[in-house]
Amino acid sequence: MTPLHLGLAILANAVWGYAYVAAKLGVEAYPPIFFTALRWLIITLLLARFLSWPRGHFRVLVLISLTMGALHYAMLYTGFYLSGDVASVAIVSQLSVPFATLLGVAFMGERIGWRRAAAIAVAFAGVGVIGFDPDVFSHLAGVVLVGVSAAMFACGSALINRAKALSTWSIQAWMGALSGPQLLLFSLVLEDGQWEALVHPTVSGVWALSYAIVGTSIVGLGIWYFLLQRYPVSLVSPIGLLSPIFGVLAGVVFMGDGLSTELLLGGGLTLGGVGYIMLRAAQRGGAVRAASAAAAKEQA
Image (cartoon, rainbow, N blue to C red):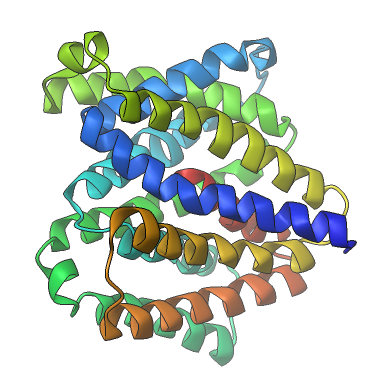
């Protein structure tokens, strides 16, 4: 990888890392599910030209929009709202990688050796260690929701393989068009205060929404897809592990998060396990899942 492209990869991960802070600010200014509904509805408008009829793929797109879209984002952003810090969310959200591997074993007949099985166990054990952090434990419901949202993202990642004939931007546009209304319905049923947040926006809220749309989805993903078109997934995807590291640092610098022993040890175990799984998946031909896992940085 050239120095310029390596710099772009680091930039993309820095953008995604700070996106965790933006998400936290966003759910403090808007009802959390409403915030992500707005995000996806606006993204749909920006990508409207990619909404040509997906012949033969509409059913799978509906399933993707429900799992990777509505359920994933509803739980992720509610988890952000309930959590006491950014760092734990940044780390726990990476569980989409071991969840995707387990789904491959359970439903696609894939086999994993003892090393990857151990890496999966280490990744989940790391989250268990994080749970012993007193601050995290006091907001455990938020962490659990983020973990379940990672499982939903993994389900959607597996389904994307059935829509590989569609372009990335077409999938994004349809996910927004289908997920946005679902999220809006969830918000109307489960939340209140949407109208007040919309007509009396705060500067931080508008900035967070703009960052989620432009920074996370357009700049971050644009750079990542550019790199994936030029380099092997096995080279690009491990660099994606910089994203939660940047997220932890951003939480410390901008949100005043503390770095406890439990968070450092658990985060190291989780990211180490995730990194090994991603590398082995790419080396063994699991390029689709590895790329999808790398794209998990778009979650925030």
